[in-house]
Picture 1: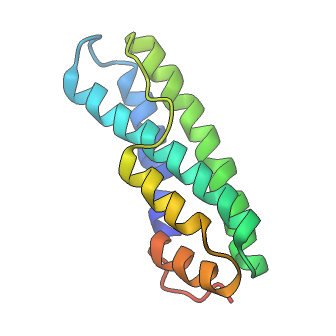
Picture 2 (picture 1 turned 135 degrees about the horizontal axis):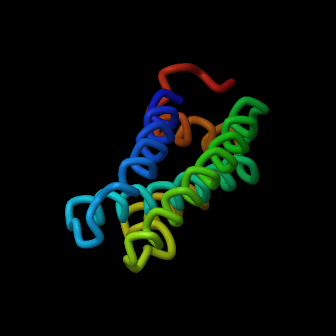
Length: 125
């Protein structure tokens, strides 16, 4: 959960600070690209948690993850458009592979893997 909040805060700060960056600032574009890919990955992982999770806590966290990262990603996509850069259309290859691996799991096994993947220390059970 802390990772998600940090990610959301980073995406929001990034969206605000990118507005003042020069149009060809490669460092900002690289950061923005990674933030957008990460947001796409978190949205899809949240949707997967809602579908494949067993516990209400995992499903609820998945819902929050999807909603919050979709909102952050819209801001990041708007910032990318303002910079005139081509935005990624989804998560990167590793993020897709993680999603594909977890999509084959359901129930308690999914919940445990999801908690590990999200870096959660608490039991979602």
